[in-house]
View 1: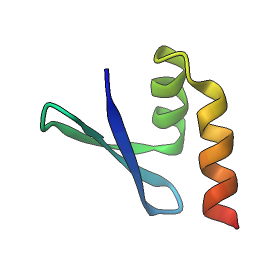
View 2: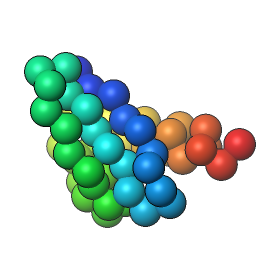
View 3: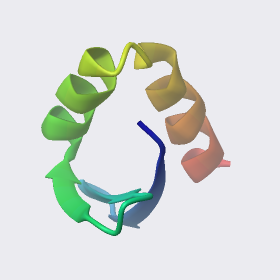
Length: 52
């Protein structure tokens, strides 16, 4: 499943799926989503990029 992420505020991220759907997730929901996708280390990279 392909998706893009866009941080909209410090506690919310929009996840845009390539089929046109999107979801707004809290940090906790994003962590769960990324774990389900098997991408837990992507969150660390994403957080580092936001903080830099």
